[in-house]
Picture 1: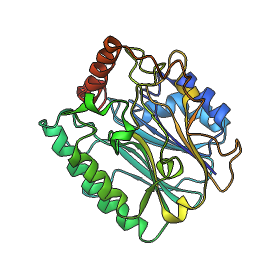
Picture 2 (picture 1 turned 90 degrees about the vertical axis):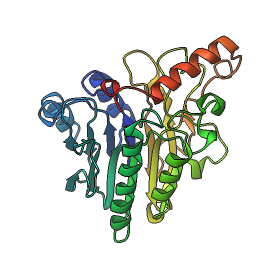
Picture 3 (picture 1 turned 60 degrees about the vertical axis):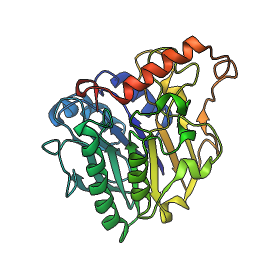
Length: 305
């Protein structure tokens, strides 16, 4: 079974890219984030395309800048939108959806951004993660589970292209990373990092300052799995091809193959960055890239957080 997660950064704007990717990658289960649609609009735009490809779907959105979805050809049972204890900001937002797919309880998650460490949204992010931890712990105690999505946290300095440029910004602070460790502490494994412990792997690159061709990115889209699921992983990688070209999201999908790997045990980023693209970083370019990456970490609500 192939399970993938992708922050699509506006499902309507990326509709053609998403459908092309579904046809190429052939995932069985897809977790989407930042759809920016309400449930009715998602159905209106995607119902026919997904039906023709054999997908059932569930969506949780309010038409603004959040929104999450699950697409599945492996069953879609016991759908749950949100989770108990969600602290809200001030009301619960459409950031989490779960269903049982192929015997696995799969969560599609869009963790709050946090904006800046002194912003109320940062405290909300930590409370939200604590509530999620409690929910996932309860589920993981009695069934296989996966938590996938845009976590807006780089787990370690190795997951950021230049840690020095993020000092004092969100996504890399110790309280955020501690909250993530508490979540994985309920029995979840970061299966991409487990498979590629020493490799440079990113999932997000800012649109500006040539961040993508120069491979100046962050790994903030995570694939966490319980031990019983993790031992089934045959391949896990970032599909960089979906980030290339025009009209795409600033995130790339992360793909997890369970039991069999149709394309082989490839990775960690496919295709890999070229040697030319990952070297020769001038100081001016570094400064511009760092500034845009910091702006992403402090993005205002209207641009997705």
